[in-house]
Image 1 (cartoon, rainbow, N blue to C red):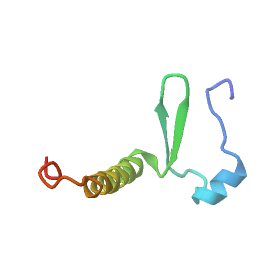
Image 2 (image 1 turned 45 degrees about the vertical axis):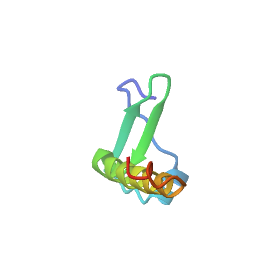
Image 3 (image 1 turned 90 degrees about the horizontal axis):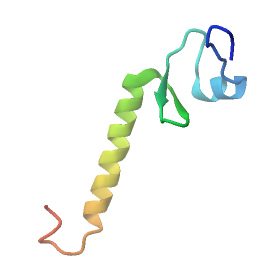
Length: 71
């Protein structure tokens, strides 16, 4: 951490995530930790929405009672 509050991502992560100089990342404050998201906040929100929808659909499919499945 620099005096100005700057930090750098390890090269391994930058290469894996495809982040070039000046690329977008988002930092989410989790209280006792920070989550770093490549692509910025808009891309992070879109991915979270996609994953939650997928999990929701899987959860509905797992409900054996047809009367509860559409609730």
